Structure formats: C-alpha cells, structure tokens
Length: 208
Image 1: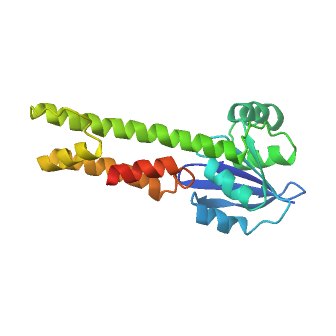
Image 2 (image 1 turned 135 degrees about the horizontal axis):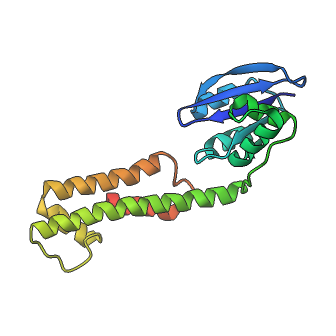
Image 3 (image 1 turned 90 degrees about the vertical axis):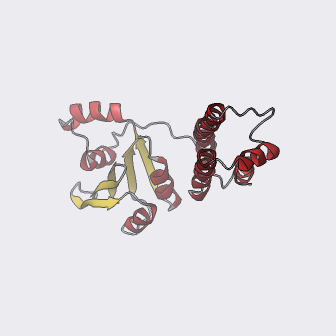
C-alpha cells in the first residue's frame, strides 16, 4: 500500500508517496490539471490512500482522485499543523508530512459533503458569481444611458429592452453587453452549468 501526500497549489501539486515501511517511494511535482492528475494516478493501485489539505480549490482534485476509486482524506490545515508540531516535531507542512500523518492514521479530517451536496454548493457559488458580474455590467449600461441623457420606460433587459439598446448603436453599451454575454458564456464553457437548466436558460436569454 502507498500513502500519498499531496501539497496542492493553484498551478501545481507536490507529492510524496510512502511505502508500507515508511520509506519515500516517489516524490515529485505535477501540473494542477485534470489530465495530468489522471496520468499521475496511473502509478497507483487499488487500496492506495491519498491526503490533501482543505483549501479553496481542493474539490476538482478530490473528485478526480475519488472518481478513480481511491480513498482520499481531506485534512484540516490548522489541526494538521498542531499535530505535526507535537508528533513529528515539524511545523512546515509539505507533502511528506501529510503522507506520514496519513500512514500513522493521524490525519485530522475535515468534513466532506457527499458529491450531490458539493454539486449544489458549486451551482450556488456560480449563481452568486454570475449575479455579481451581471449586476456590474448592467449598472454600467444604466450609467451610460444616464450620461447620454436617454430615458427608457421599461426593463432594459427584456427582449424589447435589448432591441432598444441595440438600436442606439452605442459602442460602450455594445461593449458592455458583449462582455456580459462573454462572461456568461465562459462559465458555460467551463462546464459549470451541465446540471442546471435554469442557468442554461439565463445564458440563452443574455445571448439572444
């Protein structure tokens, strides 16, 4: 059995794999990319264990490893540091420290919701991000109309309102609408709406 500690960063993942006898079997770094992670996992077999700290971007890595049938433990960063200081006499948390905590069953685990709950949370975060982006660009359009002293009695973002905006042929408004649509589309291209038909409807509405 291998005990694999993953020190995850936004651009790369540093790893250390320990064998049953506690010796370092593998050590290195890979790009934090799903394809690279999948290729990396080919080095391991059923029963090998993985551990990483709970960070703001752990989910894609966690999901990828879990999808390949491996057990993954998510460590609480603050508790990991305390345990490492007391048991390993080292407060510098790296992939080897995580692997040794895993091997000795000392990992203080963070709560990991099931995949369905994580998916719901992801969609909610996406909705919040879209709302923030949407509101920002809509406000810019309103301000541009105010600057031009143009009044419109209605909702600018209905079908009729968007026709009105297009008829103005104003390059700033056109640019804001383009950026707004592009921001929606970028979320779609990243696969963030695969299971949310309401959000897909929102994108179609904005692009029409």
